[in-house]
Amino acid sequence: MAELSDPPVAGRGRPRSKNAHRAILEATRQLLEERGFVDLTIEEVAQRASVGKATIYRHWPTKGTLVFESFTVQFLAQQPLPDTGSLRGDLLASLRAWIRNVKGTVTGRTLVGLIAEVQRDPELAELWRDHFVVPVRAQHRLMIERAIERHEISSKTDVDVTLDLVFGAAYHRLLQSHLPLSDRFAQSVVDTIVGGLASEVERSPTHR
Amino acid sequence: MAELSDPPVAGRGRPRSKNAHRAILEATRQLLEERGFVDLTIEEVAQRASVGKATIYRHWPTKGTLVFESFTVQFLAQQPLPDTGSLRGDLLASLRAWIRNVKGTVTGRTLVGLIAEVQRDPELAELWRDHFVVPVRAQHRLMIERAIERHEISSKTDVDVTLDLVFGAAYHRLLQSHLPLSDRFAQSVVDTIVGGLASEVERSPTHR
Image (cartoon, rainbow over all chains, first blue to last red; front, top):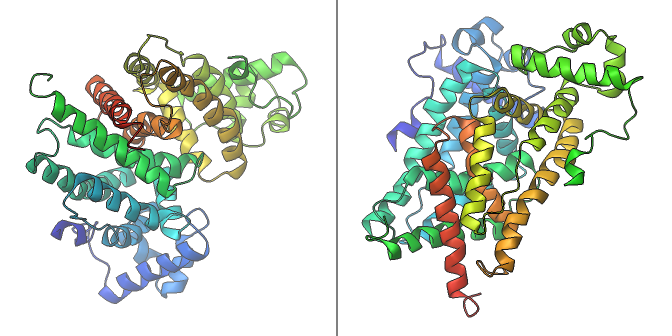
């Protein structure tokens, strides 16, 4: 997964030193943990990292883009690519890892803060799509494609809709907070989707 | 659906006159259409409605709570409760109505703006849960409960997870904008879920 470890904003220009870059990201990570997304300020990041605000703004034009880079490097490293031999096993392992990563954690609160910010900052929205949504989905779709190769599900399976169902349901509970991201939830989500995809195999090829 | 037409913030104290209340909500609706959530200001609403800012703040402590009331009254009125005789027909009609309501519309942009605001405003989050999420889900769950009564799906169906799958997938595309809310999407979402729930009926009662 080489593309997942590439720096998300590579090619946008570099800060004067790698050390400053690292110090800024580390200060951001610490302040996200201490204050959270809403109360974090670029000024405080600059103080903590012992750099001028201009050094930060040269590379990250907004708070959103700075938090985005600090967040994605960490988040993407924590997304495993399970290979359990069954679609049910893979989806469940992947969804459980996602829930573990976001439920009641700084990562989860930062994810929520970023999604909110994405809705009001078009530049961040572009970064978000190109360097978060696309690589995460590229990794996740491998689980579905392997299940198709194993003839566990139909080759006509809509891979994108399958991902929207699994993770859309999970993001829904994260953002609306109406019900907990319980393990029972994860199992029920995966069972319904896998059952639905399997029933399409039984109906095909005459059905579709 | 009496609870859906109740004013969401009834009981929080009333503005001095019903006319002012109506004028404020109408000005908010107009400004959402002209400016959008992010650029709307209470000051401009007050000017447009010919009231003082204090009159607005007395009833709506934040921009979020004001926009929330203007939005929910309209949104809830546009959510039908289909009764087509099949779960597939009901879910598809409901999801299509939702998509029609939000895709490329002021309503959709306001919904997105409110969800973003909910993540940073605890008071709005409470209103949102109690007067938007809960009533919308109460209405939607009737579709699932009728399908259980018809023995179309198992009585052990997790109604909440079913709703999270249908609308979670849809909110996911609305908020992440990675793919369009197409009619093919709506059909594929509903087919997979209904197939999955139906396969549980076939497996029960021995399976669970």
